[in-house]
Image 1 (cartoon, helix red, strand yellow):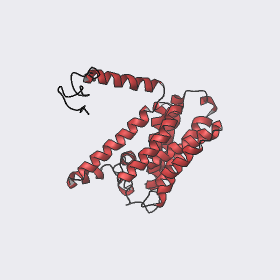
Image 2 (cartoon, one colour; image 1 turned 180 degrees about the vertical axis):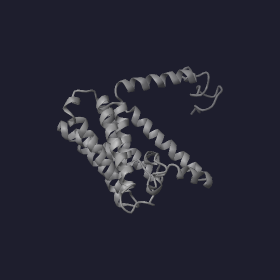
Image 3 (cartoon, helix red, strand yellow; image 1 turned 90 degrees about the vertical axis):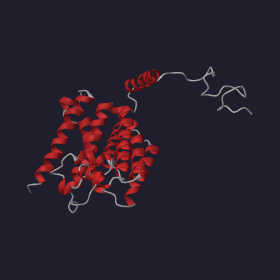
Image 4 (cartoon, one colour; image 1 turned 45 degrees about the vertical axis):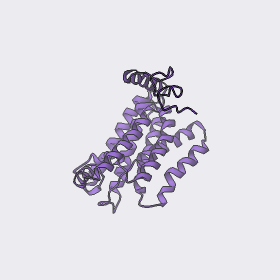
Length: 259
């Protein structure tokens, strides 16, 4: 039997042999053009572009975090400016968001990214790319605000995208309830990916609760909000309600510092 990996007269041209007429000779520029065309087509059809971006960003940050662990000093600096520690959050308010892109281990990020992909690709199709991203970010902020305000959590760090994903899950449940659709397989899958891990290890269930409430409230506002806005576009409603809810959450968080 001829070896398809070898060159020469001993066998047919292999897939990397220049003599192979079926060899892919596309340049890097041509491959990039094909990728951008596919990306544009998927974008126009409300495909899971933003979901893929969020998954890729979470994985990239996880890899950076993992590599930095070989350099303890740099790792400590990185984590001190990105992990949410409620007592330090007033000095570093951005950690209310950055902590949602950090994960504590392989299993943690694997479960979260599977959940994000399955719920994200469905919800992004309904909301559109920008509104979906807004739902994700507002849910992440809501999750971490609730965690930061929860009694006894002052010095307990929190990381993970679970709170934001719970917000997406709540939004999808309200949509299913509104249109009278039940996707049992999706709900069962998400139950195992999101609920079951609560019973194993140190899980910030307060953030899960906060994300779920935030995502549910925002989706309800999108569907049943002010009568004057019910005919407005999804993007306009998300801009108004998402901004208002974010301001409310941050306002409560700041006010708590003076109580």
